[in-house]
Image 1: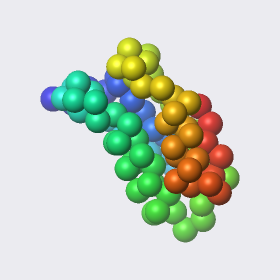
Image 2: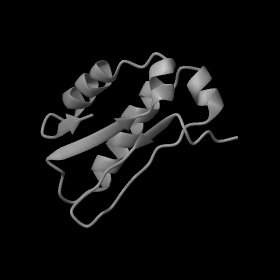
Image 3: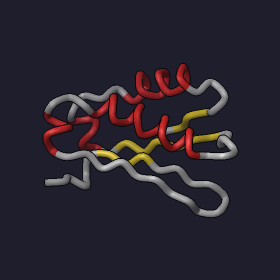
Image 4: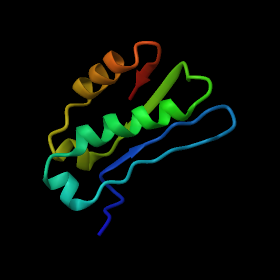
Length: 88
């Protein structure tokens, strides 16, 4: 079963394109949140012909309850993609 509440990664460009990551309950309970975020952002950015200057990551309250540190996630994304500014 898919749980729509835990996390949403959204990419929006000037044309209104969006991308979302929805995790299953087992992915949340098994601690796979961060790795799924990194993998999803990598895929989104690799598909783009022109890389965005800013990438917004939206965390929901369920993510905080699962113990995900948004600052650590943003730091790792910045290491992986230094040419993109990540915002929460």
